[in-house]
Length: 218
Image (cartoon, rainbow, N blue to C red; front, side, top):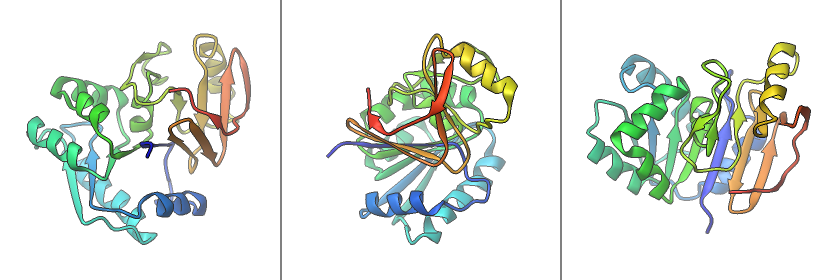
């Protein structure tokens, strides 16, 4: 069975849209352990606030896990890596992409994530960092080395009416294609299957168009 990857822009209402909820119900018949990985290891207040919210989104659609763990700098890296190896589902949280990537690299948890066979979900910053070539336009227009889990680069919280952002992404797209995601959208990757839910655009070589499900390049 192929490992599942899910990339999400965000859920401003703190509820999953029906199509995404139905996909989760299909994928998570087994729910032994969900592991949340912080975006900022030192921002305990944010982590402690947002984990219950995301947990509640799953429980609202009938998906409770037997155990929940939260990884930040309060957890020893060896213990955190063990949790990742035992997880049914791993959730890379939103927040600051650069701090999350740095933390994962410095603790060796990036290797643990790549070795895991668990379903891996990334929201906003987490989705950005899942790529081979990641992009955080708030910090730089140059891509950086991501976790290398999926072969697509995403821009979360995309607004097609933001003409300045559209122009910026078109310029970057001459270097690599970008999937620009509006909130409440999702990209699911399992093996060679790439599927989209919601409003997602492919920006490539200066052109922008609605994305279509196809074969994934990993």
